[in-house]
Image 1 (cartoon, rainbow, N blue to C red):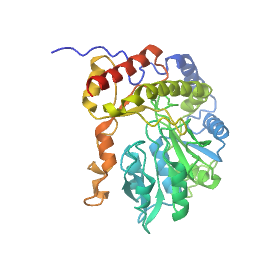
Image 2 (cartoon, rainbow, N blue to C red):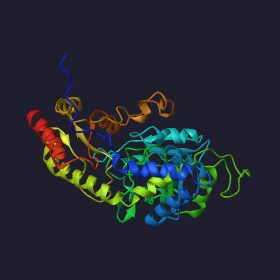
Image 3 (cartoon, helix red, strand yellow):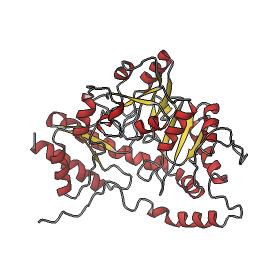
Image 4 (tube, rainbow, N blue to C red):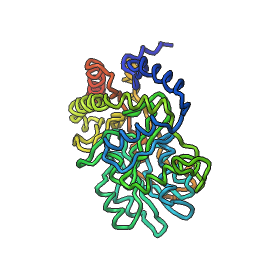
Length: 380
């Protein structure tokens, strides 16, 4: 058997936080020896929340244990529960549906746009019923959803609008940051996100201070901030770690540069790949507005062959969602009998994510692009 070649272009860098090692070690010591001995929801978490709030121009930013937890907390804060329906994309990560189920409501799956792989506003509107309480579009890979359309849809039908912006920190559409189009949005800080950290965590961002305050109570066992052991509602443990808060504050100043490098790589890929659309490889739409560079994903007619071609030359790639959400056993009970989601099904068969992280060298980026272009030309 021929051994696989060494990976010369990793999908995610193994030494993502190597440059921050001294700072992280110092912060572990600082927090560990702090006389206050406050390891969750302390002054560092509050400072990080305020830093993000001011940076975004939000009314509130509430740090919690994960992006998934953030979605569930917002749904509960919006009083979404049993008997309610929430319209979600049929293509994407499990929390889009599981957070709705956890809140006691029913996810209703809408098909996606074939070009952006984000939820189709027209498909979503066709699913609105008297039981619909909220609509939850999600930004996907490197493209923000059509939030102006969803804002209008929610207004027209009197729906709550929750923006799953977990992958889109740093994205801006028509001058509005990702997460602030809806009543609330979320970011995830798992290490591979655009502003990830070495652990789990996330935030809720909102323009509504009352909604933020309710999320703040729910994340800490239903206690109001500053008043322990007085429980006003049934909450959960979704608290943020002080070491991670300090580390995120430390790295915050470098985020724009890291994001700009990702955008530069993505723009190069798009320029190289746009002529390949007729050859079976289609890049994301080229419009730079509303872009977030979590990963860069193409649609390939022969995805497995392209992935194998990249692997044979040491380039790692990744398939995120090999089937639409309603096709999973966990969510099939919530799908309408006989319903189909053709664009989601096609995206599940064709999408392939390429390396786009900020630590890639120019030579590595060119290597990826050359391999994809060479494959498309040879397999047309």
